[in-house]
Image 1 (cartoon, rainbow over the protein chains, first blue to last red):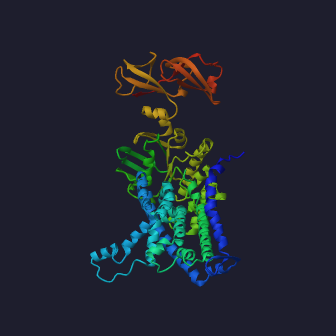
Image 2 (cartoon, each protein chain N blue to C red):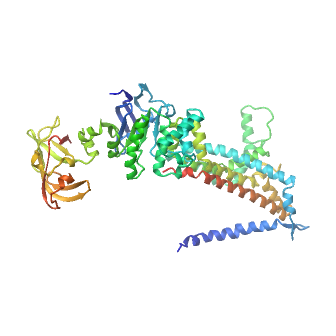
Image 3 (cartoon, each protein chain N blue to C red):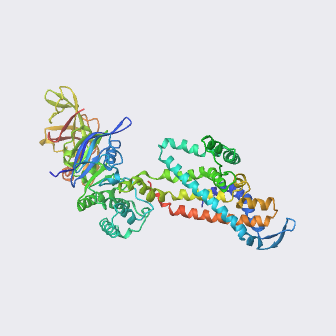
Length: 284
Length: 354
């Protein structure tokens, strides 16, 4: 007879997730197919209008823009994070834990506080402008705060530690003999990186990218603070539908599409990780 | 004698205060199958890494065909290394793994394919060319690693514990297989191993390393029959050691028995030494031999081909091992507790100062 203990051990977590994750998601799903009441309530008649509205050029455009910003943030974070992880993994083994500790140190402070810090840095009288003036820059400085770039910078900054951790894992597990074998067979350092190290660490890159992308595309705090309401991302739109416009069914429909995009990406990432998983079995 | 392909000259490599390789000098000949033999920590792997270019020596030089290569990076040396872990690229097929080194030489595709197929044929893995390394058995992976290094036709092939990961039966098959392949390709092999039997079977010459130093270098026969140090004597094969001291001009064992043997230079009256004799050199028919010891049989191990006796004797702190061939054992009713005398000749006795 199979050991049943795993089920008992998992049941609190399962119950929690069912009550506070699965059920709300189902409610949102159902809500998306109802009509909005004239005074903001919900009219319980079936309609596809909300779903159709999501794909209206106006809203589809916001989806697209959110995806571009999230994609940009994820790409930049992966480049910076992979380089950092590579450097950490190349250090002597005893120094690596302390470096990883520094990498995740920002998580010890609040997300809002960290984002506000960027306002202090980027604003018209901020530190970066002051530094430029100090260095003798006279001309008119382009506005840095309340731009798309500021949002991207904020997202990259906040999620970079995730990428470093995600990329560090496969890099630190990489058997050094495999890298040496490539050099031994005549490959330069760069060719070895391109043909051996990089392909073998794709799972970490995929995980890091999807992580940042998923967290960014639905984010509403960073665009609100650093974007200054100049433009909306999907997260802000959903927020507005539920809390300002009082159009819960449309907000629900937007959320469903967002969740579908995220799930699609997570599936792709799992697939990529599994494809490269042979990369880790041969070490011993 | 053919000319030296590789000359290692007074080469040293330190890690902190550890002298991993300590002033080693060695010449390795063209087409030789050479074994670096030593326990872990003897410096054999560091020496191999110096030859491969993964470490640079602190002093001394390494000449290949008369040219100093000691500071050339691994990708510019006509030397290939087969790693202990095999280090196959897990995301590439067998054929891609083998082709990798040829792609680095920028050879035309048809030539790469032809050479990959040729070497796959030799290692008898043609049917598995499209497999990934994790779909292969240990023995198959070992062959792929060998093929990947051989296909580049290096001047020198280094093998780090090539058979270490294989089970016993496969290991003895591969020992002969490696010799066959070496012969076929006509490439000089340097094998690092801690397994003395492996070294004896495969190598033309063996170098014994200890604590980063070269103890002895010679043919398997020389190393086995004429060890120059007590360590080498004990490291290769089984050896009986009898404590002796010099009294007048003869050696006296702890049981008072006198033995004759070549006395090492510098051994003075009364000083301690050990006499070493191989188990197969001890004979129950002792009448013909000058050197003798007596003891009581404490164990009998039957191995089929031969019989091994353990004898408790006053002359030796450890049980004396005696190996009898089937012929010798025939007609000798031996049982545990019997008193026996064994004899051996002076020529088969080595004496080492402690």
